[in-house]
Image (cartoon, rainbow, N blue to C red; front, side, top):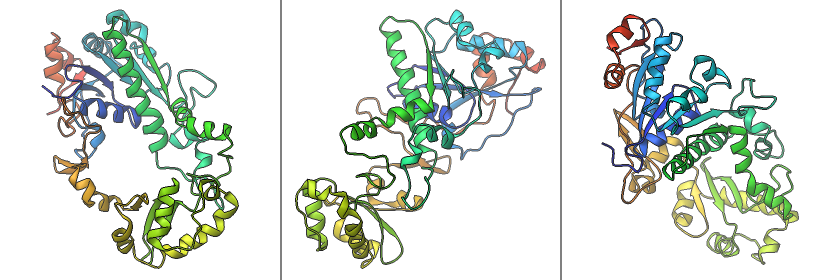
Length: 382
């Protein structure tokens, strides 16, 4: 039994890609029992990679949802669930016979979490898309990049996982609390576009206060300011500074000896000086190696950090001390986050093969697994 804060919570995950699996990884890390419904066709199952860390900490049943016996088996499983997560296009679950009305008729306490890019309705709801498209229509993508070039996709962290997975987890857990307080189950319509627009709230607020002009690389935290950017060092590596507050800005000047006027905050915020000051700062950082700047600035209130490669990040002393990376099944990966003082989160195991737990889980529901296997409705991994 898990010790995490979600111990005792059962999640049924309809196998998918991207934000849905990541959300279920987080729920599993926090102690939930996550049962992934994988695809099985004609009694056959696919392999699974132990390096696919987003699928860690799961159990797996392999079901052919084109067969009524398979759908019936999944409905039986849903009767025992607290949360269901699905990431198909709108209408697919309904066509499978697993839509919210059917599921809530079986389990009126079920939290039905839906994950899509565009949402369950709207003119784009049936269109294909990926993270880059979703964040493009929110205005977020246009704000990221250099002024002399086009927008730069921020991996798929902002849309899929920030605007998608995190809002899905927040939504289903809020609905679960509502049930615990006497409410009924409900549908959580999580759209990456909705979540990304929500993440942009502070940008809209800054604009309303006259502190953001929607011009790329011309604002305080988009690489426009000389005191908030990345800079190349003498050895061709990069560092980052974020000396926004006046006291941190003054310390940057003091420790580096750069020829800048600390002035007051409003002088520092004067955009007409930024380009000239940025040239000075860039030239200064090229005078030393990254290691030399680390020795001078890291750990100070300058708000400084070396720009590390992913392999370097796993070895940084702070990440090592915090045990931010762990090895499971021979694969180095992120440790659970956030941290709980009384109910510690933990990785519940490496990814398992598709259909690894079909027999055990369905038999526990009282189903005739042998008959289901014979009908080609489910499959058990060998």
